[in-house]
Length: 116
Image (tube, rainbow, N blue to C red; front, side, top):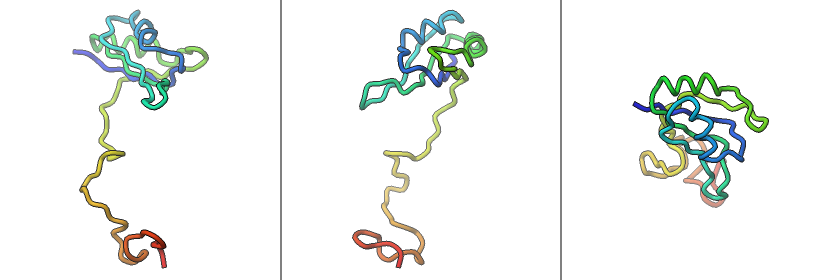
């Protein structure tokens, strides 16, 4: 069983390879990925490392949390499952409404809509 680790506050100079080599001293690294901005191609300052076992992951967390890398104190912890926040691209019910309150505004907005 592998354990996924979150690595935050990374310097923007860190690459997938350098992240993997830093964690390799604590055991076998299954994968290491620095998250990149899709528009600019620059690092977002965080990434994920997947270790071969939970014991190796815990050793890496203990050994690297708070360590200074290029002047930045990195954050290393177990990754949490992604939460469904209903952000961009998630429509929920699939309908568009301006408001559910009848005492606010008139119509559904548009030009000049709003409070009266």
